Length: 64
Ligand SMILES: [Zn+2]
Image (cartoon, rainbow, N blue to C red; front, side, top):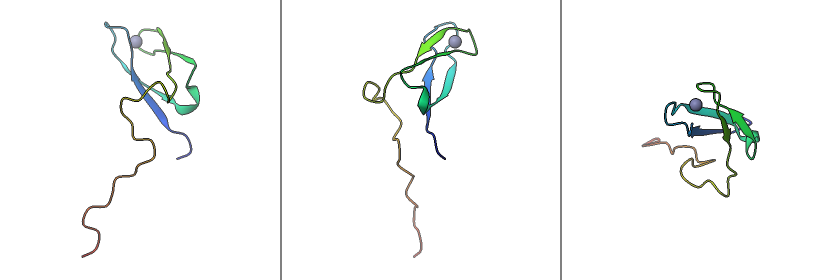
């Protein structure tokens, strides 16, 4: 639990494969395993769609 994982969808419409890359790969380009297309990994400032970075789900009804 040291590095976060960035998930993004391959921009290739014929692929649309979900790519999981380490957080350290931000700003770099990774190659899609599905189609081999290079995908730019956005920086956290630019990418604000989903992914609540460090927000563990609260325990529901913990105790009484
Ligand atoms: Zn792809």
